[in-house]
View (cartoon, rainbow, N blue to C red):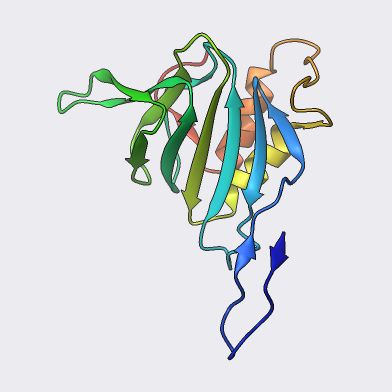
Length: 171
């Protein structure tokens, strides 16, 4: 992270860098702009999502989340007025905003690795959650392979610690 220095008593301009990448379940995530850098107002996280990956299960968290699809084809999931799960297509260039506490999910439905920037507001919990469950990645093009599927009981405990709750049962 670099800044332009304080001028006239104003907050410096922040230039995001390529921070440490982490493997979170099946996505390579990089916290590009941390809450610490923004005065805990928001955080920007880049995700490289393999085909079929993401978090398609409806879940909630207090932070509002904005998806900016940079590469690939995603679906963003939500609920209609009757509470049924619905999919919204989100091709490259799409921006989808989900208010805090609203059930949602997402998945890369394309045939190639997708890239999405996610902005979380306020900052804090989501970055700490990703860091706690993630595995450090040295080379984004060749992330480590987890030893096996995630321990769902342990994962759900960490989710609860950060106020992330699933509306659908994880498989």
